[in-house]
Length: 394
Image (tube, rainbow, N blue to C red; front, side, top):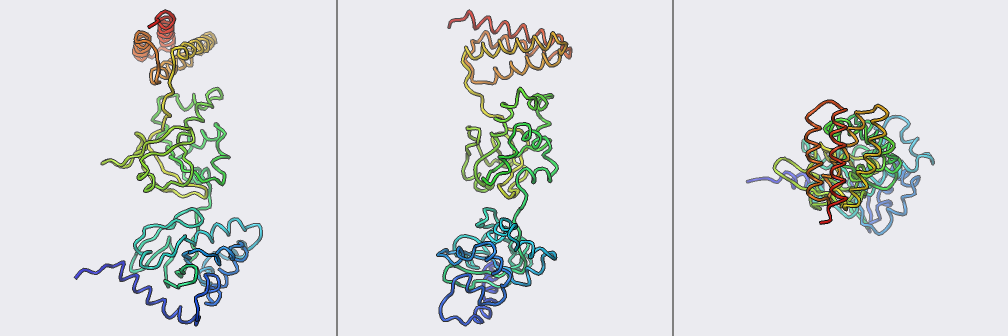
């Protein structure tokens, strides 16, 4: 006969809660706060709720599920931690911690053991697992379950659980593998937005992902004249709200802050965002969640009319000429090639002859390492494409 381990665990924890709940000696169910106060083992929790102005909220209709740390659990924290959190200036941090212990709805033990995670009132998720015969909520052990209250249920835990306290930029910096992304965010003026209270989901390219871009691309994007383009690229990696990996896969797509939509798919080789593979999931931050990807996402090309293409080539030649005459032949060649690639990759309306001139120039330019030759080859290709668009009326 097979035994459902999670079911047995739930029954065992329910049995443990009987003596606890009997000690309350209440004729009628009290709300969560009054139940905790009557128990006599949650004095620190009650004081914390008072300091965070959360008493009225947890005496409300609910229902709520509270993973309640005992006084002994609070004593496990480093010396001075509780005293510091109870100070008025720490109210924001205290509120975030307490909300991390509360889950919307009445989730009894039988349901808890079937979960792998639960979203808290803090916005972040707690991890739930059965380990060594014990139910764990993050790193806290559930010691008593199913204390029924008029507006929810309490499960007692033996340690205080702490949410992520670093915001998205700080989390990325501490990880040590997003140096290029952090530098790009600073250059694009997006650090404040990534540090705000508004929850965000970041599909974050690692330093290795940025290194896979064509040589010189990152350096070019970081230049002041290209900041608008850089900003659009970064916004294409951002989605409003906390979107965890399981939610993302169900959505299939997600609108970005750049205005374009990302495609989300599960394949044999893993989960993908467009053509970028997800390599790490659900990294919590105080104001969002980070998923790591192995390639930089590029926003879809905008439609380029023939008139726009001519203007783009004209500006490119003007800029390239100035660079070449100043002796910056490498920068000139790179600028011409970037312009051609941008036009060819766009949803353009260029005549076929113009396209062939650009493609041929690119092919020949890549066949030499001489920047002077590359500059002139690309210049001839751009000029030829421009002349075609001036004369071709089809």
